[in-house]
Length: 204
Image (cartoon, rainbow, N blue to C red; front, side):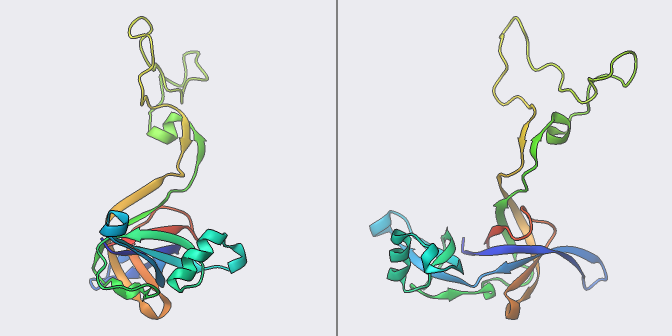
């Protein structure tokens, strides 16, 4: 589906028509420029590559500089491909006007990294045993992870302690509450993945 690249600004809240206080995420969406148009004849599939946020040419590699020069646009910091665009040309600028209020969108981003975490925080385990009767260091332990005689191994995918967060996450069917085209801003109902300043992919 068509979409744009954006940047998470932060969170706020607005009042709806019926007086409810709605928590919203503020996203700077676009403007994005068309840097490449892929066709079934040359690339095997149809898509439009968009760029977001200009950067200096001295910070661009030579192959990417040639890529942007061919499109006739300034070097871009972030690139993403979208399908479903119609009648766009190289160098065109697409703004937040692509979306309308009360639209539903899917937003993809990289979740906040939380480092190495135990099973209670990472998977919601309840802990083992009681807080007394002689035991003092087993409250947040995972417990048994497998049988010892057969199959004598720990199965793949066993929920254990490990790296938490810092993964690609997509949240679907988020409602567009408000659009401020003069500032390239969009207000989305609820929360979206990532920290302030992180890059997001917003698709219809």
